[in-house]
Image (cartoon, rainbow, N blue to C red; front, top):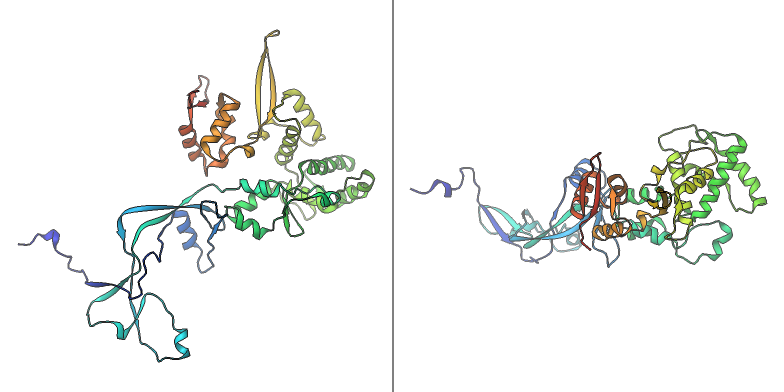
Length: 413
């Protein structure tokens, strides 16, 4: 009696698997897609789908949808893969111009090319030994700062001195390995502006001067940061601009008002509600970046200068500079006191390779508290869970008696 496990099921069908006469190996590539990409494809309905491979020739390939970025990694399989497709028979037409319009779908075969087999036929499309994995990754945006930093905008009077290249939106899309949404978010966070068809960053000092003009004029007009009349403010600043030779124009003021406004506050057209966090962060980072690299400010002196730059509209908060500075404490032997200093140390200047970034962080400080180090790492991962995994891999953690965690290097020097 035959072994039942070797018998085909009662509902099994016989299929002939054949190779097409014009079969060419390596004509296809199989993609294994994650759930997020599957959701994008299935949830788009009948709308157009957008997939773009972006970057320069020297870059490792990434695939971008309008909102996400995926790395393309080839994974070899232990068994050969034979993708197959059903054959659709069609009647051959007479020769002539009509033949040029016949759909040459590889799944089709002409009736006079088929044999007399009674079974369903499937054609082998390819023989493969690998698939391409699509893995969600953080957008690779570091090149944006390099490209747009070549030609920062600092007023029309200085435009003739600019030597760098300018980039349109289409050019940025092809060069930057990130989705449109991620690129636009980066540009928004850095207060970039479209000027004559090209995306530009403002020179930090020039934007600082515009913001100073805005805050000082608000004081003159007795305006609240929560309800700024844009037209009145722009008019007064532009009228005084020739006397101060600042080169500040109304559109520049409007751009700053819009860029530094609170996204969650909706006012009537022409009015703005300034974001305390955005403004404080920009002012603080600018002041820190003006001191010579490696030098430090006494913390109390820096806080006083920072507060003064806000002209009474906001109160400086060191928490807004997380990921942009390092606070250090020196013990004064003669007084047995601790003197605190602050120095400019931005995550935007750190390498994107995780291991190299951790090395750079532990060169600055041997030990980091959890709330200190995490802001310097968030741009490397997609969520907090993966940030925890990154810390576990590259740093040693020690729980403190009073709560909290301190991280140190895994590398023994």
